Image (cartoon, rainbow, N blue to C red; front, side):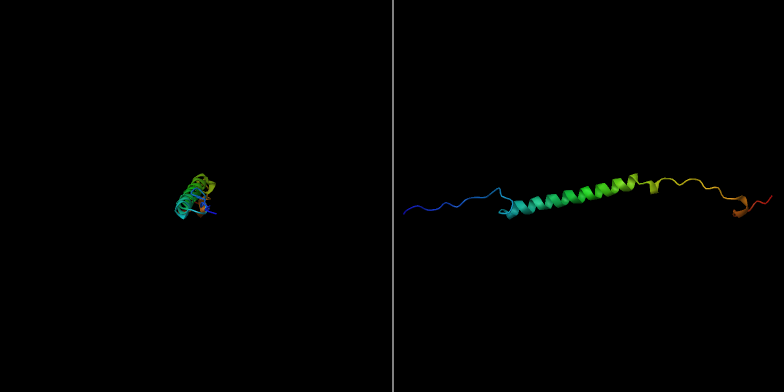
Length: 69
């Protein structure tokens, strides 16, 4: 019985190599953060609340220097 079991290498498996896993998770977090910031910025840029407001007519009698008829 001179047979020995050879260990199986799992170099490309996600859970076995912690260096590759941590690098992958770092890049995924970085991508998610950049996507979130970019999406929020784009949404704020296109939002209608930052458009110019319409000109409101103010009665002449209520202005700082009122004009009476």
